[in-house]
Length: 168
Image (tube, rainbow, N blue to C red):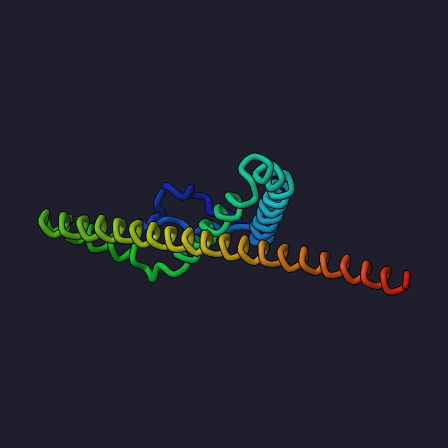
């Protein structure tokens, strides 16, 4: 049952009144919202994945998924650093220490640049590995084709020899 006072009007003791909520209705609402969100995400995946692959290709789509996965892992393992930075900047700003605020912002900017540089280096290395693998696959395929052609020649010569042997 709700308190007669609205949440914005303080009670006689100066405290805001406690408002009871219907737990069952709140749980049902949360469950319904979660189910609807999951259903919408599933439908989006079924519809959008083929469209993405058709328009940007499977290679770029795979890279997109991989980079998204990396960002999710980075977000999961941020170790509270964004909150720490917010606290430190807020503390320094509250003290009026503009020099420390500038220093923290510089450190944050440097960390972002460093992360971007590392991502770029990793991308170049993976692109180089991909090029090396592509070359190795092409060389292996050429060797296989050469061996296959020699095998075909051998089988042809063997049949001719058998035919000549049977003709005598």
